[in-house]
Image (cartoon, rainbow, N blue to C red; front, side, top):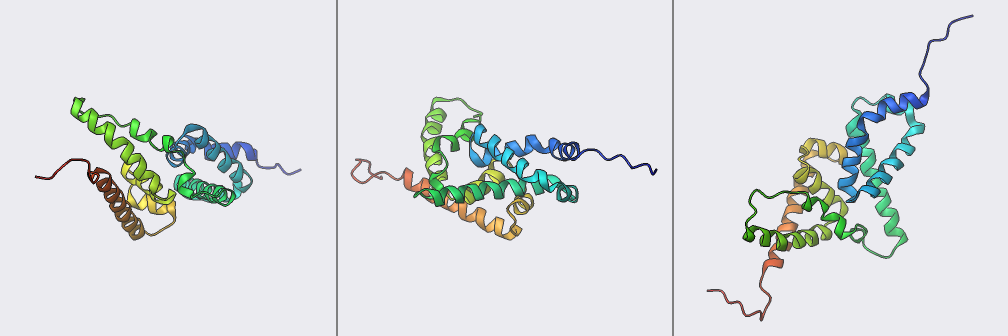
Length: 195
């Protein structure tokens, strides 16, 4: 009788592959969804979807970017499914309150009253500006400008060339800048006059 080589169970092999990346996946999912519960649901959906594809997982050279790409695609598919089910724009599917959570996590270097007032006014404007962006644009800005991902890594996760990431970043920032300038313009008849 031949001795069969020992091979760990599929569950243990899957756990050994995915477990080291779960925290990073949750962080990325939180950036996409804007809240912890939705992030956990998204990661769980991806893990459940990938479990039957263990052989494919074992053949991936760099698992973290691959998992992030799967997570991002699952997020976009979920948004598209929700948009087909409801008669509302895709950008309205994310809660505006949850989008601002990342702004609240930023700390100021100076706690002067002027700065506090400026931040109190800028926060809602940024929330509105981010809400006007598509989920793809919001994700791009959050990954690159907030989380500090390199353009090459963002391109790999989004499945687009680096040049596309650069041009999209430029357009997203221009859209934000334009909206913020519109918000800061005095309303006609407000009594403010330029000198």
